[in-house]
Length: 230
Image 1 (cartoon, rainbow, N blue to C red):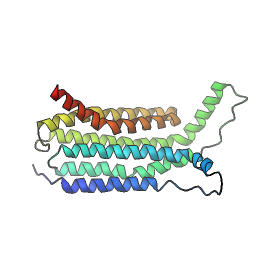
Image 2 (spheres, one colour; image 1 turned 180 degrees about the horizontal axis):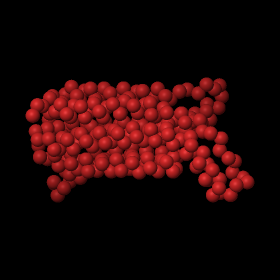
Image 3 (cartoon, rainbow, N blue to C red; image 1 turned 135 degrees about the horizontal axis):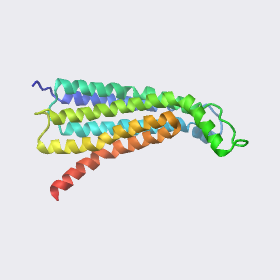
Image 4 (spheres, helix red, strand yellow; image 1 turned 60 degrees about the vertical axis):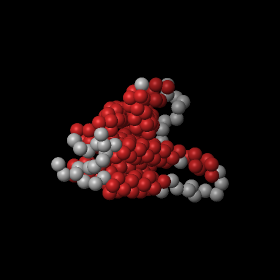
């Protein structure tokens, strides 16, 4: 089997992650107001929320990818292409983030809670939210799912390809990481399904995914080392 050096791929991936995170922050604009700046900033909470979710997700994917490459000694042409496939969807996150934050920042007029009973009012609000937020939130979630599936595929490929990993211990650590991180796929998929019914609640699922991805590499590798030492 032909193997390729991993240094250039690692450097390229790190550069893409850095550019994506830089592009995310460019969507945070200064409000055009002369007074009540705090109020104007608070009104932009959907933009800040989308930025935090995407920053945490991109950062966690970078941590996961760094954890993977630390256990790999060489790459294959197929793993090169898998990484490029993953970076393709990572590079789309600034666009999908801006798309979701735009629609969350410009909500349609909701019925005033008054004459309607609580259940009817909630159903009306959710119906309006579904008609306006479902598509941008779904597109955002599909992008996250594509990245998650790609990173899991990279791990599975490294585990199953002889000669890629540093040693047997690296295989065990990577298997533990992959086993934990695949739960992210299930959460994103569940969030996408939930988004068709309750689109605004789906954003909470994306927050959970970002947190899960952020802590998974450290927890998984630490557990493997703890079992070996016990």
